[in-house]
Image 1: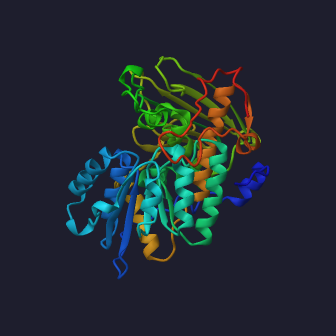
Image 2: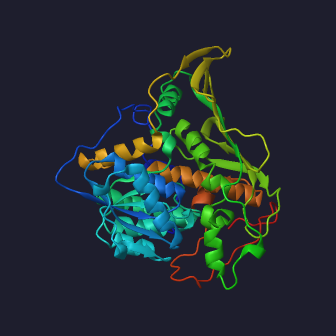
Image 3: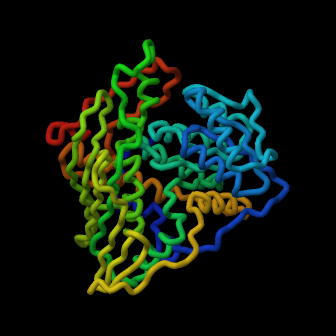
Length: 432
């Protein structure tokens, strides 16, 4: 892990900024051509999103098979396998022997060592940096869900993993699924090709309900370790999920970063807190972040995950010649508000597209690598959380070089020690 200070300029120079051409390419739906090499897939983290990703991977290519599965707990594996078989309906693509169904906190290592060619990483995000490093060091192609880390040390580890993947010519496709959505590619193309002029401000919303409400302490089985209890309720702990901003609204942050050509913001401020009390857990249930770029360009993200409130997941970009919208469709307007373009093209499933293009790139010998932009978006989300939790203005350099390590590394068993800080109090919680 590189502990040397990293400047915003250095970070941008070593990242692949999304250009107006590259970021909005609008390829036809790709299907990987079969060849003599069967690709074996390993699946780590057998929850709902992982189950969907495994099914999409098996549908993306005619010469693949599900070879190994791993999860922290035994219950999800058979349930997930049955769901994937129901979705794929091709027995030839399933070869998961009983001795390749791995259970435990170290299951990821066993899946990676089982003879797979590609791994799907869908465990809670706090484990992601370690899982990704193990995969690329072992020479495996990767599909990894978002976010890629929950703290700055984790992000710095992922930066190094991305470098390793590039050196080994490995695919790293990120679960920022909207980047693979045809309508979003088209509307962001309008933002980036000058159709609405220079972007001066963007505003994104992620207003919805909680993913997994924290159960009462009375629901905890007798004898269950702290680590197991937290992992089973992972969304409610910052070290595991990153907070709702970093785990869920990170998609909205990624929209903002896409519009900003994946250039790191200069600084941000934020407000947020916990409105609905819960027994245990330490995440906010709402936060709003204001980001700034050079030249006074601003970006705003509003996240709230509270039951019974107004819901919206939209994005608005304001340019010098017009505006662009992701709100009940994808369209642009002139400055007077008159609509002048609307996306009306094909709308294939974006989750499937990301896997179709992943496998096609491997077959073509030109593996996709989303590493640079996935790191930037993840770090921008963590930066916003830092500002919200501390109540301070946080610069990119401060955030990226933070020494606060909330995700413990090298946990080997369920009795591993994890210290969870109390709910943050802006103005009192210190930036580290």
